[in-house]
Each structure stands twice: as structure tokens, then as C-alpha cells.
Length: 138
Image (cartoon, rainbow, N blue to C red; front, side):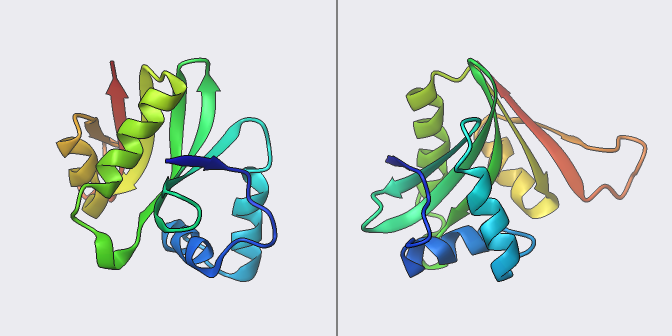
């Protein structure tokens, strides 16, 4: 796993991975996401390397041992092979995290639950909740 600071010359494969993680995958939305990772409180990791990107995880630091997953994406052809799990585990180890948070939709909540995250609806009063808070603590 490799930490990167994105620049305008990102490979098409890496750009495509980031686009998979974005709600707004337009050129403007992609540039806004990349701009975040040029700041000191956002981190972008690629798996396994920049030259052969199979997955990415973007984090926002919330404290010395705490972060939030901002983006997580795996090449669609390589999903269900443990790459997402490796990205989460690698980020925890690399940055010494004891707390990791994420927000997800119903489809992705199962992924986080399988990794030991506590998954709760963002709005507990909504029985049809579609967004979830996922929290992992060491």
C-alpha cells in the first residue's frame, strides 16, 4: 500500500477508482475530491501501488489516532477478493488508528459490519434508513 498526494497527472486507472467512490463523478466533483487530498488532514492510499492501482482509501484525520473513511473503492473486476479489507487494515496499521468511522449506504453497511464495525442508522427515528454510521474501535 502506498500513500500518495494526487497531482493533475493521475493515471486514468487511479482517476477511475476515485470516480467509483464519488457521488459526483463529474470533472468538477473529481477535482474537488483531489483538492481535499492535497491538504494535511486528508490522506489517500492506493493498493497495492500507484503503478498498478486495484483499490483506494481516502481518510480524513479526526485526531492523532482517529480518522473517517471519506472514499473507498476497489476495481469492479477485482471485488470480493479482500482488497477492501486490506485497505481498511492497512490504514489502521499505517496510521496507528484506534477509531475509524465511515458513513455508508445499505449495500456497503454489510461490508463494514463484516469487518467488525458497529453499524447504526444515521437517523434512528427513520425505519427506512438508507444511510448508516459505521464505527470501529480498537
